[in-house]
Image 1 (cartoon, rainbow, N blue to C red):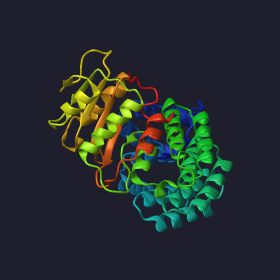
Image 2: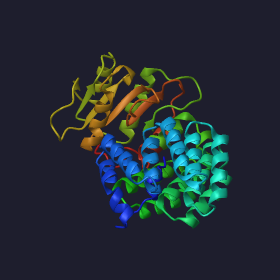
Image 3: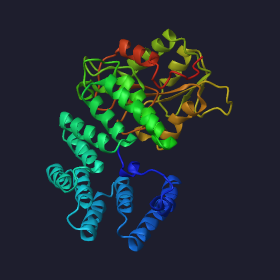
Length: 363
């Protein structure tokens, strides 16, 4: 979610020139070289606090939280009883799930330097992780007042969305997009804006109170054909609902690409009046329906499901989809959460302006 390297600004100051190489390597995705560059800077300029912050962010982003905790201990040996090592220690402990210890370390960091924005940002993140949303917002407000930047706005948006305050969350994410220094930061904020607008389709519900199918739509923009209540829909019923939805939305495919051996795809192809194939066409003008019964057994599912989105034409359909799998554009049911057909949800998701299919060519 948040990485502490968003505190940095390329101002041309000596510290930024010194850190320009590892930053550039990070932007290019050359993580091992960036790490070596940060370690070199820490060896030659151990008093440069920003280098400690950014190297910590690298470890955190890679989920190397034990190493991040060890780095905070190194920082404490370098700087003594100071706000920065205490803040890094608190952040690492929170990532390790040791929330109370992390908050204690962050409280100590605040007592060392109550005007360090990083401390309050991390305190807000810790409170968010344990579900104390009001406390998180107060800490983030203080962080932003001390050091305004997009990272705090981004986190504030997450907190507000978790509280079900979708309009306020969207405003926070829009602020983060406007404050972004780099395209990747702006794109991340824009993704959260779209996700928040999908959650706003269910006013009065916090994210954790939504049924799994609705939350799946909000998170991914995919179209669920069934909900989480009622008698479980069979595979054939899901296929029938897809055909009904395709007819109502006037989707018109040029072929059905069956990527597994399920025998009933032929019946759907007949119903849609399209030929049945088993591989994607080379024709860029084709509008394929890529279909799988259960992508969990397909090692190349992620590539297959991305093909219609990359082309901007056609869609992917999975009858049963594990939560951890690459999302299909249309799914019958999430694995482990069977439910009855939900035509109203399917239609709303298919027509939502922030859904996966909004700009897709489907006829």
